[in-house]
Length: 438
Ligand SMILES: *Cc1c(COP(=O)(O)O)cnc(C)c1O
Image 1 (tube, rainbow, N blue to C red):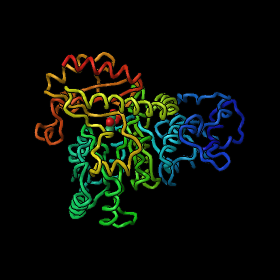
Image 2: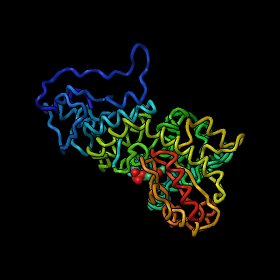
Image 3: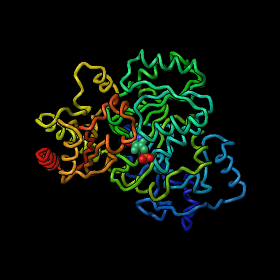
């Protein structure tokens, strides 16, 4: 949003020059955790309100007919880069624009868009970039709804796909990209890293190198899009490794309190422009209230994620040595010298707080453990302040065919855990007593 329009919106406030955003002091570039408190918002344009108001309005008043026309040129894509001013709440609003400014900060992205859910972000991106006859290349496995969208729903419109396993070598990635190029147009390369529930990391740099070698570096090469919900925006910043777009379910760590559903996409402006136009057409933008909640959440993002990460390290250290535990699939335990450890060292700054616990036994032992937990809640989702535990084989991945489940390591003794910001020793006590019930 231009600051002029924010001034126009505040009604009683006379038009005046907005205070420019302060992004550095004495040559020191301010960090995201500082910028989350005020970036993109000038209180003096909203009656001095410290926090941005929630703008509950469906439409915005133009200052003149000519301004209305200019804004529509931006909305319809006649002029690239989006509207200069606010028009109608299906296209944008002040809370969403402030949110988008702040989302972009974490990865120094050129631009950002917010959506009503993570799946709305993914679906809008795909609708904007994909055409009948195209072949999407993706890493596997993907979030189940993403896999349904690409494999089944886009399939109805004549879109094909080819995949490679998340941990694939550069040679395997190149081979799949080569086959896709021979099959026709490749609209995008879609990654998810770490994969759920295996936690296998994708080598983003290897995908970029293979893409550039096979498709060249011209404007028509397929953009690399990555779902960074599990480690971003704190522990993995894929734009730095050559991806063009980063997708988020903001429902998870960004929202962080398990009280909203939202999505986001950050990255290169040229790739985001057609996605914005598609969002304007179909109305998948986040609502003002959720956008405001996310502004609140982003203020504590680094605190929450850091604490959850520290807690997970303590809990995993306890679980690893427990006699009733077969294995802990946690990014902090990658085998020294392995390819996964190399990818982790190059791409990640933290091991996250979501991991896989393999108990000795099967469904009976998993269910006994889950039912005995007292602090950890039995629910799907992740990235909230509270610790959650679930059973992928019987819940999120119930409909996955048995052979594919086995190939992905989704076994009956697997419990998926997202660690929150509680006291780490309390969590250890809870897991300890729940393991006694197994
Ligand atoms: C939750 C999730 C999604 C979907 O997000 P919603 O906000 O539920 O629509 C996509 N990808 C990953 C990795 C997720 O965990």
